Length: 477
Figure 1 (cartoon, helix red, strand yellow):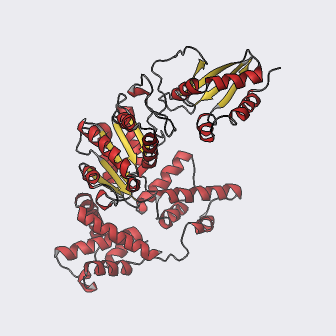
Figure 2: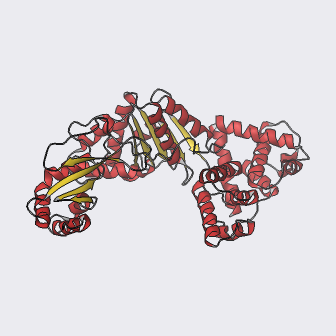
């Protein structure tokens, strides 16, 4: 009786491991999965067409010898190649190819995944490579529908929608999305990429992290294949590069990115970048690159306000079919202010504890579970605290903030203070108005809307408000 496919393959690997170099073994043999043993035919699954071709070219004799040692001289090897189907199915399509023979394809429109980070001279350019054979590397779960819009990200999201509708033809090229950790930059830019693929199926979209780009470049540099590397990226219609701040430690990779950027931009292709800082604040990146980053639109994503945090939680609960008391959702949204990632993490932890302890979710359980997420030294911010901060920031006497005056600098400071009071305190609009010389709630509503509108249109004003928001948050810690 034939041995099981797992056992046969493990025996083959034990021999191969002693023959090939460790790094080559890790790269070319560990990813292989045995699928089936049929008579004397062992079927193995490989990640891509390129992977299969490389094995056939470099290791076919070794594979044949080890397999014949296990199964006899009639032993044969067949491959099952994973293929990107371009759809939302959980399992990728596969195609079966006999070893040591002619390759047949059952579907000429199948897309082959992009192979990256392989220690060979040319891990990208496959003979006869067509642009449509490049996998986008996008996660299909990242869409505009799952990205909650709020004051914190409205400009970036709407710019992204515009780019996805008309990639490479708007003034938003490049589109640079910047902001802190866990605020949704990667989600947004991948949503743009997925939307472009949906609306423009002929466009070749590629998402790559800066770290992967740098590692690829270094591999190609060691193998004297930099021209191949650059040529590959110049084939892309929409290039998305995540976390460009990490290029600050890779001078030569910046040279390659500069060449790729110029070619794509001049060819009317779309570039989308993310960073933890505005291009003007990036350190260690060549000025010629920074100047190009500033050619298009730089849009920031800020910490989500209370309303947006509520929307994020409710959307998450709806998608997962979950329910919990409104007071609990409000408690989470009010107390988790750091970023979206921690907000969702707090929700998951609460659900897990409820399930493990077989206990209904209530406010008491939420307070117990969220102790690890909420700093113990946090204290409630008052309207008076915010008023003092704004007065110190603008060097205004406290009493001037409460006076009835039309002087622009005082009116604007008062509007910002009301905006921050609404964002960071639990007070009602009426209570906030009373702290400003007895003004009513409609004045507070108007002030908050004015601040939001100015933040969308005035960059310097936005920077001032963001700085004050950060000061208030620090005071709460």
